[in-house]
Image (cartoon, rainbow, N blue to C red):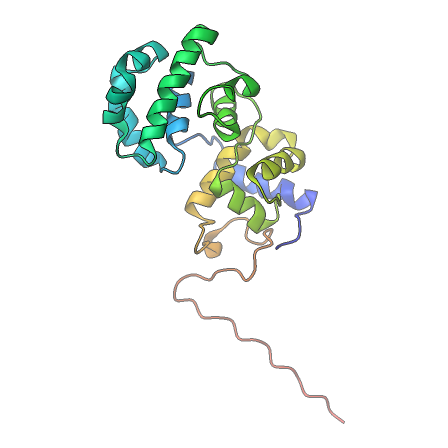
Length: 231
């Protein structure tokens, strides 16, 4: 386990990621708070690419709670069967859509606690919606962010909630709005689970992960030979 990063290193860590990606955003396709909520709910244990392929046709016929409820579980299932856990997700999406109609006048609430009352909506989903569409400085922790935070020493924790709470504590205020996106994209494309691509990482020197991975085909540096003591 790496040592926790110092505050100075954390500030530099985010500064470099923000310079690489000045305007980060989710890779899920959406055009309203409701369509983002549905897309994120469908994205658990699935790729954004896979979700986008399903929601493209889906949102053409059902992009409001009322239209989704009218479509029903069976109708919705026809659009999302390519996504993992689709049966349970179809049930939750219809249920949360009905609850939005019954209790929120068909509108997506901008409060994390209210969002978490919806069927199938946990802290991660609520934080993504609050951050992306309501501009709140929340940090949603998925598998990528959990890995990056622990591997680098940015925010060490045994659970996603522990990491999320730690990130909110250590992330400088000016970077909290974009932190979720920088970390998830960094984990998705560079700090990968099996083989992190340290050789092209802009924050490798700040990261506590060791030993750093070399570029494919790169020679392993020779260990220095200890000099013999002379009499």
